[in-house]
Image 1: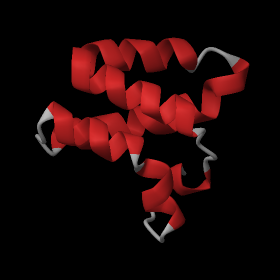
Image 2: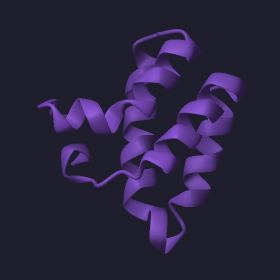
Image 3: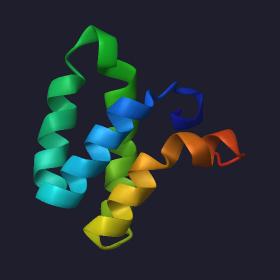
Image 4: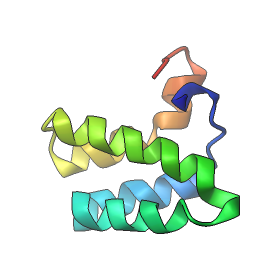
Length: 81
């Protein structure tokens, strides 16, 4: 569950920037690679789900990147994904 994942601000900022700059495909590859690493496994798996939600909503990359970067704040203030 995404809401139970502890996200590091640095990691979500990196993912958000990659999404804005390089798009869905590059971000998905980055997260799939990070999902293989023990330290970032759960964050990456959760962000892959968020990435698919953002893509399916057809939001522009700049807004999608913003949503990804602000995910820890959204979840902290009561969002439940």
